[in-house]
Length: 463
Ligand code: 4AD
Ligand code: MG
Image (cartoon, rainbow, N blue to C red):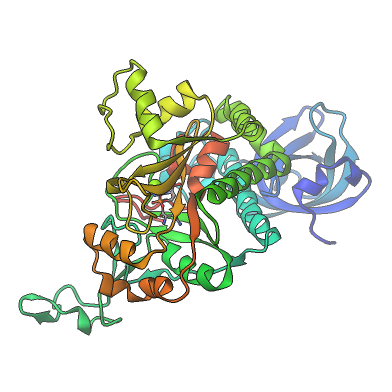
């Protein structure tokens, strides 16, 4: 008999079918009439299917009556219409095979209401909990939508390298990649001689696939990358990971406003798909994690994103009469308290802030005619803050070289990036969306460590 998923067995259309289910027991409850109810989950959907295991089963006493949370089983039987409320079907078992017993007292995730902090310490088992099952399915749905969205619009998927020699964001938050033996590194005039390293020069894990995305956009038009990126920022916040997944579209002939329009359509598509394709999981997040999350998602979906300049935002903050921990003046990097005030209190909406001071942003952003600001954009959503960072790129060779020197980069090391401006330069734009930030927004989870399968944060890389 073919395997059936719990998701299929729960559907009304399955009534009358013979099924073979395989999964893990969530609970067993014995009835006075000499039979048992087993709640079975296999990860195919949020809900369990109820199995009715009759006392007449050959191994009823030997096996069925010893099943408890965590046991792994195969169950064959018939799907019946369920008389119970809240479920369309149940399965009357004709055969129960136990693959793996589980000592309920020792089972690390047995306790109900275990904290997320605790579950991070048993990340190898937390996939069997409601929250992490729901998370995995929503994450999968969003990942799929990302590809669908761009593929439907004729973007090429580009695999950007993981290892590189450049620092796209210029923030110096790089993880070094080396095969040099730290105990006896080759030295040249007292310093490590990286010409003897594997790649013959210092190399790092990428912080962004943007620069390579630009190479492809400046020849093929519209492209996107979707891969892991790495930042050695030693900030232990609920919004930062050392390894996170980023989606970076890059488009030739798009200006900053085209970039904003694409970002808005993209975010809205991800929300729509999560709501329509994972309704059960999203309902769980609303009921158990954050009562506002569905409402917030709907409202972002139903309103136009506002476009506000950095300078206007500073004015609003100054006139707000609020005291912020970080005092506001033109030129400051906006902190999460400022962003939250703008999105959650002032505008009560998603805001695209643009045209930031050049001193705050990386070398590649196009300088405005005022000389003081660059064509940057950050998309801020209620509840999370920055979810996207992007810009129109500097396509003028001389300005770009000047910006590189100004931000302490050596233009000769980026000769290939400059060549894109030297030969047939093109106005172009792009942005980066943090996958985990989207998931925080959708699910209302409060810590980014709980929306990625295996979080990498300072002092933590166990699993
Ligand atoms: O604003 P960022 O640093 O922009 C870039 O990396 C550009 N190269 C993107 C581009 O234009 N192609 O990062 C983009 C997004 C942020 O808005 C945020 O959502 C996410 O990536 N992000 C992080 N997510 C989790 N942990 C971190 N440490 C993150 N840093 C950035
Ligand atoms: Mg940013």
